[in-house]
Image (cartoon, rainbow, N blue to C red; front, side):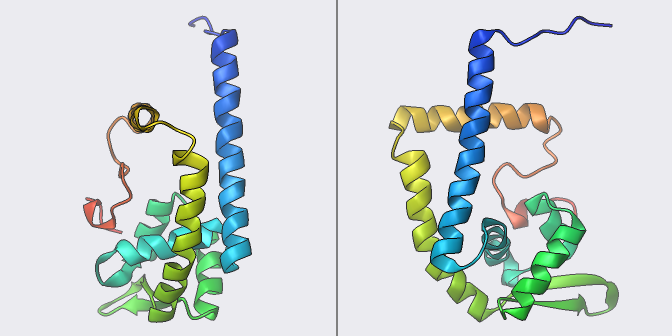
Length: 168
């Protein structure tokens, strides 16, 4: 059994600062989207993933993987988005077991409207406080962390639905 390498004071301060920043950022982005567009950040992310996919459609399995979401959580969100006319779910022709999700024109319009406020908030909270050098450092640090979190590179580094090798 190996001995535990406890965090020193600087590492503990860095770790807790990082956790608080991520927590507050997630909450701030969710509040902004709910206030400006009436949708939570999770729903916005669904619309974004679909907007970037070929023909604006993905299987539910692939969408869940891209979003790192459980199928039940995604199903609940999809039901809500479908009832609002923002997405459409249907069975794949010739394969009744596979459910496809398509971003509707109305959903694309909602996404376009929401994107302006969202990108302004991301810029205000993440990029404006940093120098160009710090932005580069943030990317490099994030890539290093992703390397430890996903050493086989199974998850997309940049959410690119077309870049996924596994079908879903």
